[in-house]
Image (tube, rainbow, N blue to C red):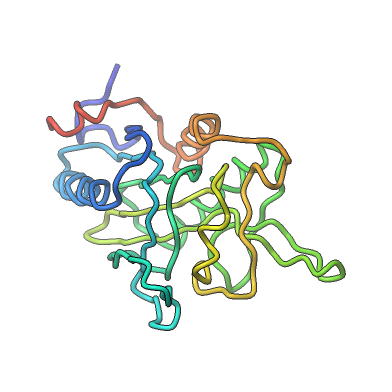
Amino acid sequence: MRPIPGDDPHALAIVRLGVDVPYEQAWSLQRWVHGKRVAGEVTDTVLFLEHAPVYTAGKRTAPHERPSDGTPVVDVDRGGRLTWHGPGQLVAYPIVAVTDVVSYACRLEDTMIQVCADFGVTARRVRGRGGVWAAGDASLGLPDRQLGAVGLRFSRGVTMHGFALNCANDPRWFNRIAPCGLPDVGVSSLSAETGRRIVVEEVMPIAEKRLAEALGLESYELHEEDLVRR
């Protein structure tokens, strides 16, 4: 049975928005859900999707980190720096009530680490860097490679934005930027690390399960149309 909106503190609504979702559209929906969650009118909710190609700049993005070729960038209200979203990358926007945002960010990283392990990829944290990483090998000239990133906004006790995990995206999109302001690292994906194509559709149900586990919540599916009626 589905929880009554806002009444079940242990429920997590899973909303799949599909592919090629324009960034501004998802951002607007996030803000709407955030307001509803703050008011207690909906349960904790997470939006899963693939974006249409877009570069976004968090509040810590420095001017020199922006593309120099005139590539458009959307300035957003999350923390972090410059990154890319687009096809082949799983994006999750949990809009949830939390009391400790640092612990919460670690839980999102734990989610990605566990998902990577489910697909046979060893991911880890790197001190001083956000997100999750495949370890490099200095003796081979192989840098650490970012598999997933976290960027958050925390307002009135409820989070926005979330994490992005590279599944089968084209790494050349990152060539115009220093991902998350880190010029000395590489970018990889589940597909590149395993040598087989692992698409978002395959990863999403695993990520949904692992996120609910990390947050200690019981997930249930909710269609976008039912969400916006609330």
